[in-house]
Length: 93
Image (cartoon, rainbow, N blue to C red; front, side, top):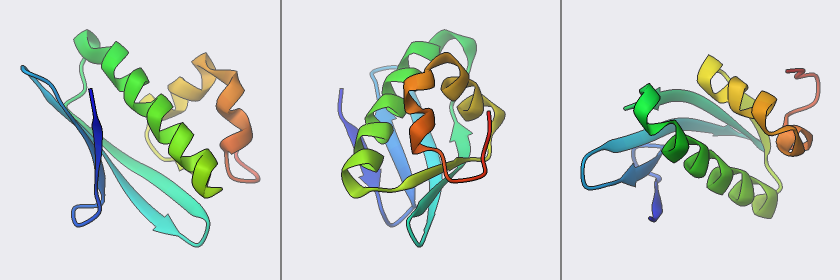
């Protein structure tokens, strides 16, 4: 599965045979705000985790700090504490 960074729409997209999941973002300075999760339900939680892990790798490479603005994305950081170091300063989850 390949995650596509659609810079025009400012969203990361994952297309499967049955679903399309996207995470909208906004980049300001060295921070990436993950603002909206589309196509989420309980059945594709594993796909969302896979997608977020790939986004975390990209953030590490580009030295971005993450600002999650959706509860679903904040829960990911609670489940995966190894990524908490990528959070922007002052954000505690």
